[in-house]
Image (tube, rainbow, N blue to C red; front, side, top):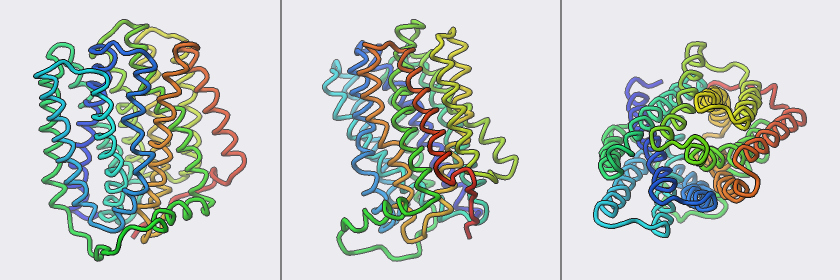
Length: 398
């Protein structure tokens, strides 16, 4: 790893995901408590914030291959700060409506969609040697800052959303200066217009890879089956089952990244993941068991413990999946290939969010989670049995 670039990138990652962890809690609180939204409306709003990933991740990946991703990330941080400042001002001066939440969600989700591939390709450009260890370090920074942000946002019920959102403007803005100091990309930027062939190149590379294609299948399953319920069902459980508020939402939101931090520490201590394919499958299987445990209607402390276990499982899946994509992607298409992985996870999220919101009312919150766990288990077993995923390992980057 370069001595200068990697710490600067970790600083940018920390400010972004600290912001995003807090923003998730405040956004859920606005929907569930401030607006008293129904499950269908919660699902619709969470779909709006994740839908741009389905539309723009491939474009963002192609853009990060063509222009300096360092510049992209600076613009994304400052643009996000401007959006949140606008929402803060709106809340301070007027009563917000559900219809007004949707354009805001789409706008901030669009910036997030362009950020994923740019951030991932920056990691590839500042790292030499073991990619799994570098990914584990970046994931550790991501989830540790997410824990801190989630817990800080627990004060929303006490302080109100305006001062909390004002703090988030400062937090996400603080990521721009260290990212601006990253080394410039050496290869020249493209001047010709973006073509459809460039967007297809990353997709075709993944579809033609016996290593990356099964990882993509599980990434899509994660987006549809895990991200949607996490964003929709958990805050509804807090309101309707545990009768809590922002503090309880913050605790549940913090448990997943906290589990990922603990898992990441173990991975870093062990020097990375050696059998990345097996780690990926094990992570998915354990996650389905944890979701099934929440479906059994435990007390709040039991649900928090299950989400913590879900986060530990997620550490395996996230680190293994990102490592395989980072180490097996071609250098010329790396950002586009990485955007396909993120598209699998985040592109599936709006489908899962909307479905969870629509299913939760007629089926029930716990029954929805039981269905998710069963489907995830079946898909993971099918993919691992029909592909060579269990035998895949990382390759050195350098």
